[in-house]
Length: 360
Ligand SMILES: NC(=O)c1ccc[n+]([C@@H]2O[C@H](COP(=O)([O-])OP(=O)(O)OC[C@H]3O[C@@H](n4cnc5c(N)ncnc54)[C@H](O)[C@@H]3O)[C@@H](O)[C@H]2O)c1
Image (cartoon, rainbow, N blue to C red; front, side, top):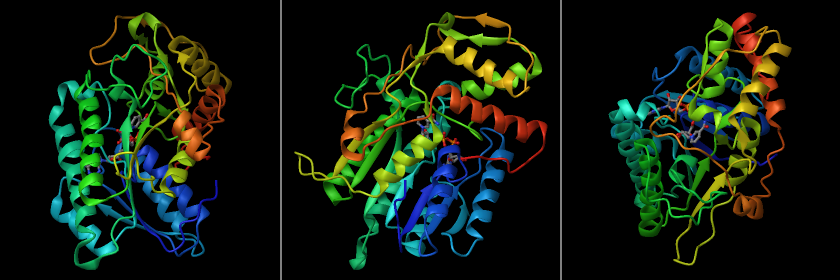
């Protein structure tokens, strides 16, 4: 992966987040100092803010090498229209990658406002700023890439999930906001000619990941010797994608604007996943094995088997033919390898206090 973004100004929202951080880091490291990344994040406390701070400090350190790309961080919310307009006017990004969002399916059941504010109001502010970037003869945004989610497939019975499937029946507010993003982006692409690509991510995991996700939460419980809860009695399948594979895919997508589709719109949606769902029980056993190998834990967890949670789905399974065809996307990190890297990082970060422990 060596896509060059020479002389580009790139806005990455959610840059202190899991995917945004690794994306920004990879671009900084593989580009020279003609590239500028503007990272925006409101640093909210949905999960441990220390992790976000740590990611930022790594980005600042990476960019302190003068031969590498430049990094500017702006703390603020997508929902602050004045700030978003200011950022676009000042930095004139050619590529915008919108990853900032309120993530998580279960949290959306009890905290709907956060999703409306970040994922709807915030996303509309990004779209408006993209539109206004062409005012007064401005060169404008060349490509908007934004995060959607496999959650849009809801309880789709047909597998693998294809971008041709009808996804009009979201089973969570989170999914509804992500599907709305795709619709809103389409109208802006159509009306104002803003090339846009939506990426439906499928359970991204890895070192320095999100503590709200199952693999991280299980690990925390295993370490404390607590019981772990296994929903739908373990009968679930997930299409896990390792963070490095995702970053490679996002960079490839960023570097090429979508062609004009049959409706005359520069608009595309891709699934970006592994195309290889794993059973929840295999996942848990592999995680336990990796954590035991690193001596993070010394025995498997006690498990409590429970029914399905509201908003959850039985299976996620990405059909990736389109992204393979257009970008040669090919995840090559096995679940065991990926969880092993997570276990190593977890040990260094939490047990050995190597605050900046990270391998990518
Ligand atoms: N990680 C996954 O498995 C996964 C799966 C499907 C979709 N996604 C989507 O991918 C994107 C990135 O996910 P992630 O895993 O890196 O999540 P993350 O929570 O680690 O990162 C999102 C970042 O956005 C920031 N943020 C939230 N609301 C904001 C706002 N209003 N203004 C500015 N910043 C704000 C948060 O502080 C956070 O740092 C999200 O849009 C998420 O919905 C992720």
